[in-house]
Image (cartoon, rainbow, N blue to C red; front, side, top):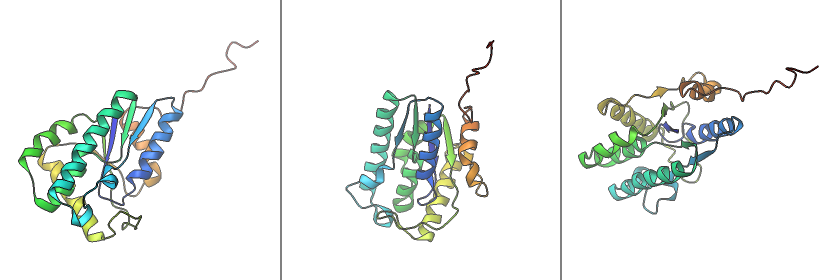
Amino acid sequence: MKIAFLGSHGVGKTTLCFDVAARLKRLDMSVDLVKEVARSCPLPINRDTTLEAQAWILHTQVAEEIAAASRYQVVVCDRSVLDNYAYLVHQVGRRPEYEELIRTWMGSYDGLFKVPIVAEPSFDGTRDTSATFQGEVDRVIDELLDALGIACHRLDPADREGWVDAVLRAVGLPLQPPQMDIFSGAV
């Protein structure tokens, strides 16, 4: 199973990934996280990004997902390939040569979840702090979802505390680990 979170930077995807992974571990599932690969990109990112940088990020994301899926029962992705493509589109426009890859790869996720903007981004050493840029990228993501006909679950911005449960319910997993009945049959 592969779950991905979509959304602009600074919306809480990373925290949500770790929270979901922790709950899955408590369900006794083998889990790996595909962390945001842009942070390791050797080229400019954020508002200074280039086509080459975004191509590197996009292809590295795919490679990381393939590697994780070969070793783990569940892969939780802190971004999807569509998010990465949205930053490329924001900077240089849509690229037909990437769209078939994006459309096809988006079908490899068993659960897609759009994380809404609930606050302006804060600086973490890498993240761009412009609320305008954050909103622009969010709009590009929504436009691409519509244009490419990709369905996703949209998390409720008013229920941040319930996001993990919403994700587990949407992918058909229990909210709590099964409990052994240690008292049945006892005399």
